[in-house]
Image 1 (tube, rainbow, N blue to C red):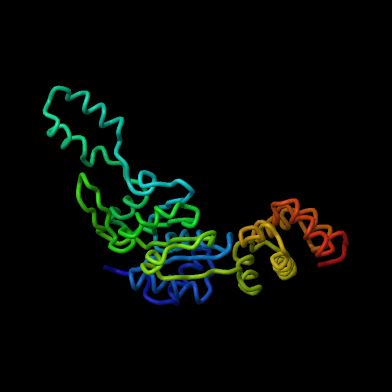
Image 2 (cartoon, one colour):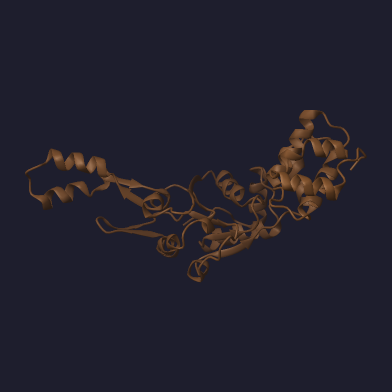
Length: 291
């Protein structure tokens, strides 16, 4: 089976072309997941680019992105497959009076099967990136469903048999580490931890995503966001919020980053009133001096 990438350098180049600047650790993990045919489990704080990495891999490889968004209560019918009961009932009604065994054979067929993200990714013959997003928000029972899919790239459907992948999808699982994932799941995956980027990398990300930002503002923008992340906040600003803030400053025509400018645009970066109070108090945002 052909691989998506031939080298770590190629991963870096193609992800960059797709608008995602990877560190060496990220590029290496993506290359190894592709070369070894293993799912890639990514943990880290919210907003560091875990989901965006999956989107970038799909864009860089012209693959279809299939996403399973996890949440409390997501079950087999939402993740794997379910039967179209309404359509089955109509068929049963239409064939009333016929032998049940024959009817059963007719209603448990492909015609009545509704493929959800996991089964859809397994059955797709084209290049596919399967994103299992925020797995730590789902109940632990979902991990049991994933073991067969991630270990053997197959799905067992009692009425139809075992569906085996014609072409293995590139699988990325993300977690914000709200709960510990099982060892059985982790054994099947390569592991990558993504933290907030270095100042130099974040500056490069801002330059790539907001090229119209005044070059003189890029450094104080990144430095201010970095200072906010050092505070005791309910939610630290993400990379996406740094980019949004840079776009905000461009929209305002800002030439100099002052305490007043930061305070008036703080809602782009911080989404809790308590965090605003902490930032204003600790960073001295009542002052109008340059940052």
